[in-house]
Amino acid sequence: GIGVTEIADSLELNKGTAWGIITTLEQLGMLRQDPITKKYQLGPKVYDLGLIFSNSLPVNHMAAESAQQLADQSNLTVWMGIWDGESILVTINALPKARGKTATQIGPKLGAHCSAIGKAALAWLPPEDLKIFLDRTDLDAYTPSTIIDRHELIKDLEDTRLRGYSISRQEAVIGQSGLGAPILDAQGGLAAAIGIAGRSSMVLGDRLEELAEMMLSVASEISERLGYFPKPLAKSR
Image (cartoon, rainbow, N blue to C red; front, side, top):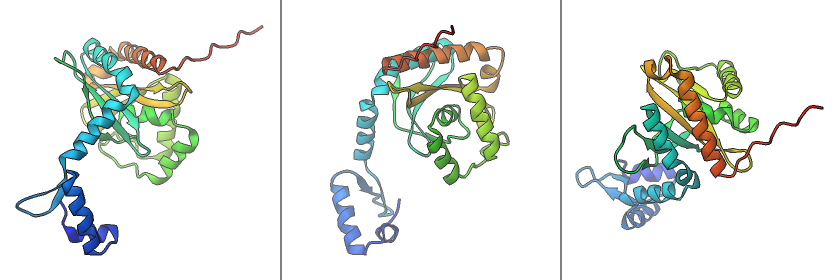
């Protein structure tokens, strides 16, 4: 939580103006005050708006059932997320053999350069958007395996496009690895990315190609539901 003075300073407003905004946001449920510290935190209405946003995403509606099927088939966790300009924002989390409905959610945000779905998103971004990301992003190391060199990351993304899917080899969390694939919209642009994650031995072992095939099939199904159909290759004469 933060206090009124901190909020005013951060927004470069005088304290009275900041207080008026805070009071309005508190009345709307956007902020709440801690009764002990008297500092302000995000309120429950923000969570409600997040749920509304998540439930209104067309890709979530198209992907939820398939994501759960992939989780059950692979016996691994399935994440799906959308690109928010600087990272990947998780909107679906499907657990294997989970009871009930697949969880649609907002967050967490995953580092784009180290997570499987993040690297899948980067690999299918327009070149100009990828350059903007690389120019303004610090490639922080989360584990000893995180790629922090720009040229090495670009090469990894090129390999990802050629392969058709990304691989994160303990780059975000030690002992955890993942595979990721793009979901494309009707224009062939990036709509989201979907991926499988779990213990490295389960993802990168003998089942890697099998898991990749499952994931790519699901990504293709969801892309088709969004209206994407790859153009057939021209026949050579």
